Length: 125
Image (tube, rainbow, N blue to C red; front, side, top):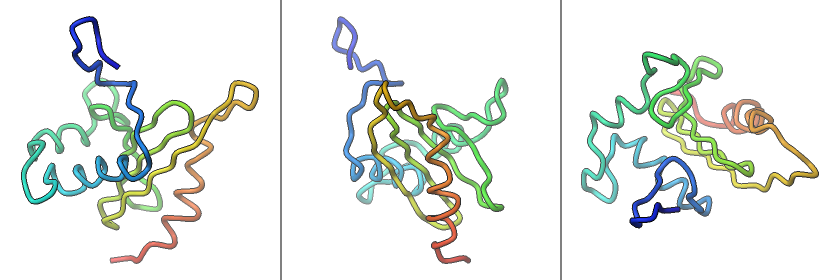
């Protein structure tokens, strides 16, 4: 989505397939490096995935969690979209789904899929 001058609004309006969400997550997992070049500065990635002064559970567009002792940063989108970066496991699960008004879903309902299914299945250390 863009404003009247064609500038992206940035915080919402993206329509991405799961594979594209994973690419975004991998960019952050690799400190801003994508396809062998620095696309986003390492400092920005660090700031974006660190607690903000006003909300310790939120960075810059990323929610910050610790699940089973593992750090995670999460981008939550509308309609049941979820992008999770698990730096300790070097993993980037993404979920795309649809949240219909007649069957409302709280975004947090997707977390058990990550914390109880995906996270335990990942190699440790």
